[in-house]
Amino acid sequence: MEPSGGEQEPGAVRLLDLPWEDVLLPHILSQVPLCQLLQLQRVSRAFRALVQLHLAGLRRFDAAEVSLGLEPRPRLGSAPAPPPAQTQCL
Image 1 (tube, one colour):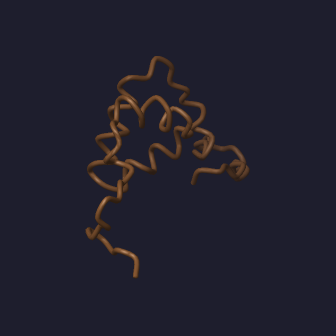
Image 2 (tube, helix red, strand yellow):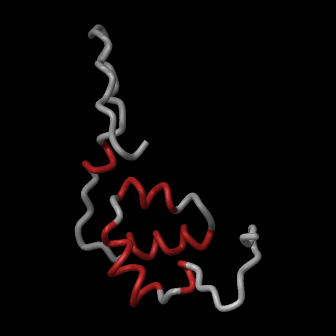
C-alpha cells in the first residue's frame, strides 16, 4: 500500500526535501511557466515559500504570460468582448 498524507516510506525523499537554492530554484522552478508557479504556491505553505523565494530572485518578470488568461474589461457603450483564448494555465 502507498503512503498517504503525512506518512513516508523510510529512505524516501520528497521534492521539498531537496536543497531549494541549489537544486529546485535553478533547475526545476526556472523551467515552470509563471502561471503554474502561481498555482503551485496554493498547494501548501512550504510551496508558497518556495515560489516566493523564486519570484524574489527573478531578474525578468513577464506579466504578459499571466495576463493571457484575464478577461478584458468591456468599455461602456461597446459590444461585449469576445471570450479570451484558452491558455494552458487556468
